[in-house]
Length: 238
Image (cartoon, rainbow, N blue to C red; front, side):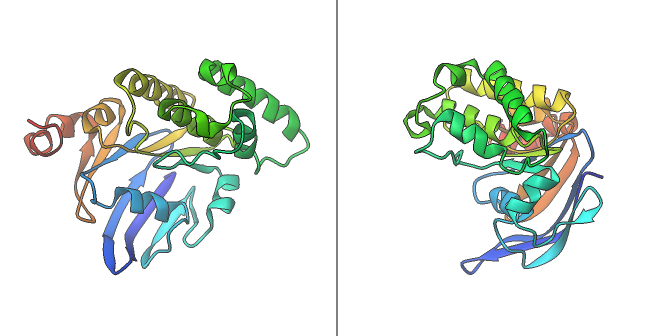
């Protein structure tokens, strides 16, 4: 199992945001976590990457415990995240942002790998190449989302966590972002996707977990949940 989470509890600011959840993601899978605002999805993602402390629980990545490990360590282990709100370095150029994504690559061939991966990012996102020396803070939301994804991929992750990649984007840009998610997955990268657009997420995922008020209330094959009347009523507006 690529990722295994057991009895995860997270509290902050006096709020019990995640109340003891279990889930797992197999190697090569695309798994989505859906739920309404405030369900605890982003808190879960932050806990997985060491950005928020756990109250209790156990997180294993590739068979090893990563509970309590910092995000800076986990990137080097092969776990990278594209955070909600993109989190680009606004006063750095596109190229500098991409180079920051490869900070954990330190082997003898690191320089060549970085150059190859910048080229690959520009092939995937030609718009970034056109703006290579532009400051990231002056880009549109969609362009920043492209950059955040490209930056995360610079570390050549074994598993990519995506938190609300479509938020605030135009329908055309959402389509492009989801095309890239499919492509990344087809290259063998395991993906955990948190997404408010439940229909889109479940159309591309293998499996889905439904999160409500800090608990996982349903799980199963994504196509089955997409057809479930309760899911359709609660998350697809039907």
